[in-house]
Amino acid sequence: MWFYLGEISIWLFLIVMATLEFAPISWIFSTSLRNPSDSYKLPPDFWPTAFHWQNYLAVINSPQINFLLFFWNSLKIASLVTIAQLITCSMAGFSFARLRYPGRDVIFFVFLSSLMVPATVIMIPTFILIRMVGLLDSHWALILPATTSAFGVFLLRQAFMGIPAELTDAAKIDGASYWRTYWQIALPLVGPALSALAIFTFLGSWNNFLGPVLYLRSWDNYTFPIAIVMLNGYMGTGNRAHVLAGVMISIFPVLLFFLLAQRFVIRGIAVTGLKG
Image 1: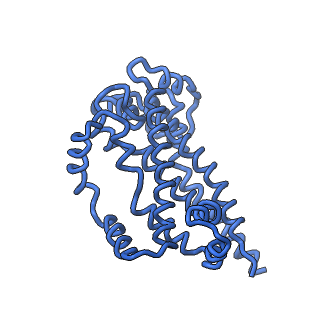
Image 2: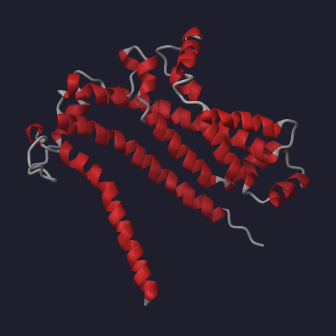
Image 3: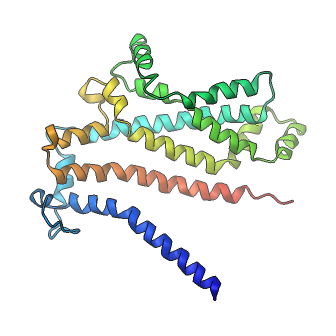
């Protein structure tokens, strides 16, 4: 009986926490469907009396903002950055975890120490470097500096170190090269870590606002966060329902990406079971 009471308590706790987490998104969604004049109504209603789905069409077909172009720019940048980090961080993580060469631990320590450097410290040097190589007002100014990360290397190094050494030793005895051991044996076993890194990277790149403001100049290169700021208008005078409709549109790709990556997390956990 105590077991069932404990299980019920856990489920109730999870339901309450999920409700608290979902409440802000529900409020954004409900406000995006309101009449703009009802956005500041007091006392506020949680659900609108009339659902104005045309708010989403108004955002997509806005004559002032090419919303679909900004959406595509953010999707392209976030996808390329995510793919690049999965490749570079997994290769570096495997190298630091499984290869033996002089100075490996020192190099890893120096590389990991970059996590202690605030982003604002390297902001001006990075801007000068990007300007010197002629990448200003280009999407490559956002992609190239983010092709790898110390956090991603550390995360995947720890994941590779969790793989039993007997697997890689057996592959070495069978004549497998380092590349084949990495690609066919080690990489499929760190699926959960790869999925977690993909989620973090995609979310960070998708929500990046400061980078596009610093490096982009032309209208055709702007990204989705800038579009939402434009919808907000000068001094926040924009249509509140349209702004939150844009926010809901921005949430959808991240939510979809998380649901897709979650499948690989579960699959990665399933394939890492080893028999003694």
